Picture 1 (spheres, one colour):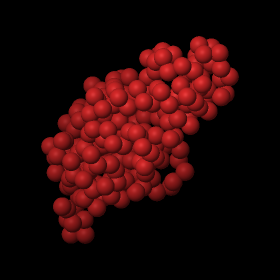
Picture 2 (cartoon, rainbow, N blue to C red):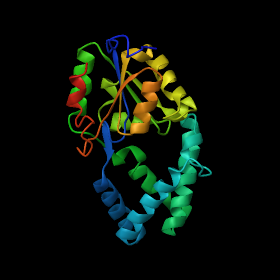
Picture 3 (cartoon, rainbow, N blue to C red):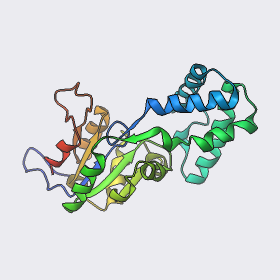
Length: 232
């Protein structure tokens, strides 16, 4: 681990990005599109459908939620998870479980996500400079599917879903295992995340790390992905 008080920072050989609100965002417009589709397909009110969709996903974000995604480890586990998710969503909609599969097929999880403008260019430039690009996200095992949907998979060297590690940010093990998977020492990695607690945790294990705030509300944070290039 590098002692920043007595030595210059190590040369950055890899950049490890968070996914959500860092290189990607959930597009509320897609929620509206999905709600409109479901309303027409099932004969429901679009606003009620939209509220049900967001309520259903919010319930899964609670680590204590029984059957939530935090306990998943493999993509096979995730298949069973989405089956249960569909059953619960059917109950919220008040439609037969046999009918909900059409919506999950038409609007899979990855379709709700969009890349942050300029993400592909920045990740491509990092790799052109010989810098490894990683993604570490507290998310489901199928992180690769979201990167594929956003046309970013081919500019990411290592994509890591915390579920597959069995440990989630900001726990130290998430960062240590990510560094091992990137095949780099922690001090040679720059970690970028929108959550300060994750950035502070990364620093504690020896990574260089910066908070990113794409809304420009935190003056001490970086405010664009282009700023990452200035630090490499």
